[in-house]
Image: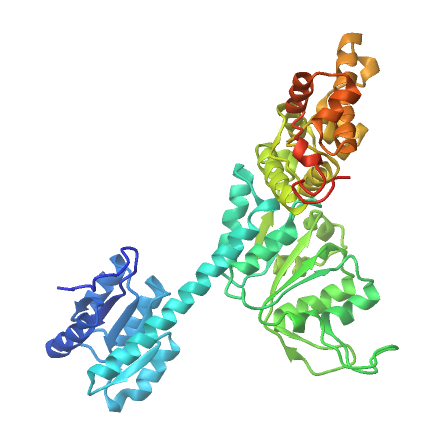
Length: 486
């Protein structure tokens, strides 16, 4: 029976080790050596028994003899890597089968132990294997945290449409397959590409974004594939292109639909051969690059009208992720708006904490032709130009512009309203502007505002509370960002 070591910390992980050997004496030796070190040990006397353990119990390390009765140690290695790919494997071998052990290492084993086994040698190799697993687990955790951080802000969402996007991102990240992202401008295609990269095995490599629509067609070939000295006028030295720069990582080809048909042929060749040929050179150079392409229009339409190659389209569309426009996931609007409010309030040293219900209703009604990017810009503008703790409709009117605000709020212009309602709206906007101006003028001193306005302290404080204004925001050197507010 296994006797796992007592953890100093209740949450400390005790490594679990499966030992597989058909010799009872060897099993007993390995179990005693490992348990004395504090590891949790299970033993199996055959590959078939080991397979049953691996189907139901997670292990940090498997130690298996290469030669077993029935199926051999090679089968244990293959089963381990298929059921628990993150588990490290050590194989035990006799001198005569060292070559076989090396072959098994090519299939995923970490190292081998040569008979006869010495306890100190066993523990040394086991510690190295578990240390390597710990490092790999840490890297995977960091990648997940990085990806999770990217899946915030613009990619934050709880709508069914965005939950489907998140799931496809996670699945795509586990492979090296090419990905095609489609979505309107401002839906966050580059952020999705970065999230795929950050959660993939290429996370430690470069992420290189290229906007194919922003580079003139006659320069794009050189930018993508590189050139050699003298290849054309102005080519004064050899230069690598974006493909070589992204080797070992991810190349993000934005606005792929704008690529010239001649270059589409060359891109297809690169995807097929995993090699690029610099302009002015005949020798192909191997590259190890994962491609994520994006377009703000339906690329299949371009295929059907003949402006985009059919074969390249299907080569890129191994994984397809469509990002929904913001107007089709309205349940995410306030979630995003509050996230942006917190971000920009911190960034600009402002005191904003919430959004007024009427302002929130206006945000939810708007159609956002610029999608999440437009919502972010509206909130940023409201924070930069506004004052107080609460975002009101008056902040949005200035940030969105009169026409967009009217469409979003569903509110007609003042002169189209009944007189009393129009007057109330004008008075409300005047009161806010009056208070802000004079609080700024007097550095937040309420006493001076009372004298200048003729209003009572109680009236001023009630109106300030209504508009989310705080005197501290107007005191020179004491505002949230420090210094005087202008």
